[in-house]
Amino acid sequence: MSTFLIGNWKMQIEPAESAALASAIAREWNGEGVTSSVTVVVCPSHHAVAGVADALRGMPVELGAQDAFWEDKGAFTGEVSAKSLAAFGCRYCIVGHSERRLHLGETDAMARRKVEAIMRHGMHPVVCVGETDEEKRSGKAAAVVIGQLRSALAEIRPVGNQRILVAYEPRWAIGTGRPAMPADAAEMHQLIRETLFEMLPADIVNSQCAVLYGGSVDSGNIADFLAEEVISGVLAGGASLKADEFVRMARIAADAKRRIE
Ligand code: PGA
Image (cartoon, rainbow, N blue to C red; front, side, top):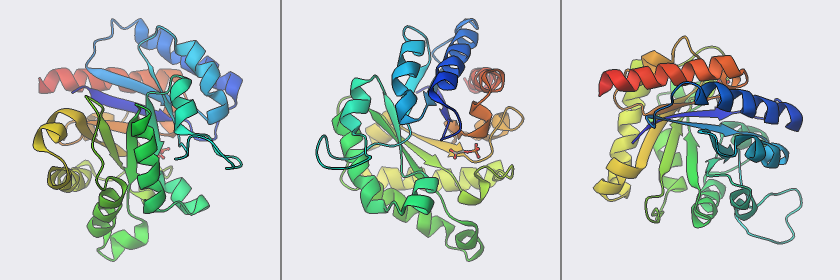
């Protein structure tokens, strides 16, 4: 499977800026003689999805969303369905991001319903898991992360060659400029992989699941994360908001992949 570089733009930029950023990323990355070894995905805000979809048409950058609601239709004020995001061309969808867990009270049960809807509409979920600083200090990190993973993916099965991506994002590393040590992240990735093997058939884990790291990744440290064999890509927030920085990361990811192969 390819290495993944996913940009989470959060609520940082407006629709016009999002479309312009998508165009700039796609233009620069396209000019690179891109190989299929790195899958580049950008996740704008919902109201920017249509404009970004237009900007990316025919370009080697995939469209993702930051969240999706589980019902297809109904009295759910303020929500946007996985169904409509898929119809707008989203192929990936982040779910259970720690900022949603923190600010909106999103639970593991909600994440599970969202994963199901995202997959029912043919998108690939990017399931975020991660412990808080306090949980890490009290030695609970592994239990928290594995608990989140088991809940979000309970009885989930991909259809066809649908992918399941898991992003390990320790909360204390998000937006802090204080990334995890790559070796520590790799240890958690190994545990996540072992859990995936307990939950899903081995061939699916080997060919359709990938575990990504997220939390203060940029062009200066991405190579260190990708040098760990169990880390199959990264989810970047701040560093995905500048086209040149994000494309630099994509190039480094392509080089790292070449070295491994
Ligand atoms: P960051 O965010 O790269 O700005 O730390 C990552 C994320 O929240 O997905």
